Image 1 (cartoon, rainbow, N blue to C red):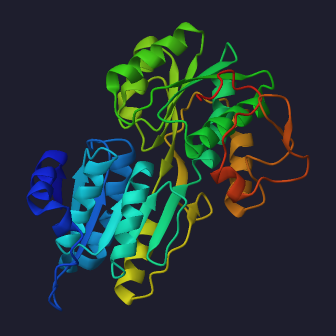
Image 2 (image 1 turned 180 degrees about the vertical axis):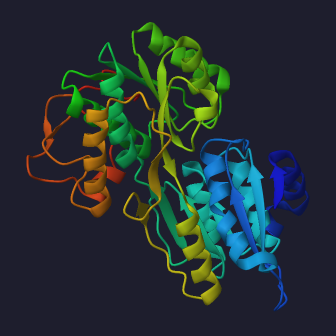
Image 3 (image 1 turned 90 degrees about the vertical axis):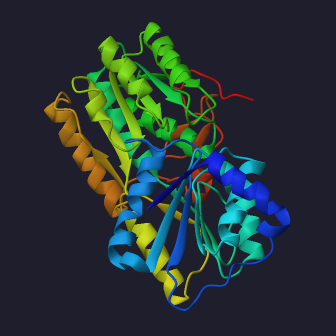
Length: 365
């Protein structure tokens, strides 16, 4: 696997220029390997979103061997630089692109439209084209369960979340975390600090400390690519939980668990379809039923009766008979958004731009 940083890619992109980047695919011989490029906005460490995406390609490499060549382009900032870098990758003959951040959407979609033989997967977006599929995890299914555990562990009833950006995917994770907590403690509240970054260890630590100072005694690290929040909580003796990949080794005593993602089933099926010539763009919203979302490293400190309830709810979510957003669900302003007996649709969850009652921090404007 080739790992390339923003600096080396930008040097190449600058040399080629935009005209070269958009100037058609490099010809491949019949026996050339399929070039697969994964682009992510942060440095890839041993935990986090980028790590989960990279690990999701391991079964693809195992299945295809030298018939695929995987390149990982890490620490690529969203914006014009990313557009140039992704275009150059395709111009160099890589025909399968995984654009691993919401902010890559417009540039990646233009690549798909200009290169119909290229298959593109885009993380967390909503646009669809014949060769362009957005994909997202139903992280909220896992965070609801983490919220149940958090409320059972908490002594103050005050929970916190350090969150990256106020996009629907992360808002839904917070809302489900809150609803799960309220299923155990109806008075539970959640405070949020938005750091507006996928990767800012210092800012993440300060946000965690600020929440702890407000008596939040369980902190949900919502889409951080570093263990900064988890480590800060461990040092303070406060429980933490997170998304994407387990960070237990950074918090051996006070780790509640992880709403982890396994992208390998989806990535393998998508590459298979590309190779077979049957790739078709569609919105992939995947969760426990598809074995993409699961809970890793539950804390043994979760009370046994609470864990029994959690396992029952988890089974219903996995078989489709239950959902974190089954009514009644009330917004923070007191209005009912899901009636009793109803269940929120995936389309409404994907577009979520409001908090549930119990989240005490207003959304940024």
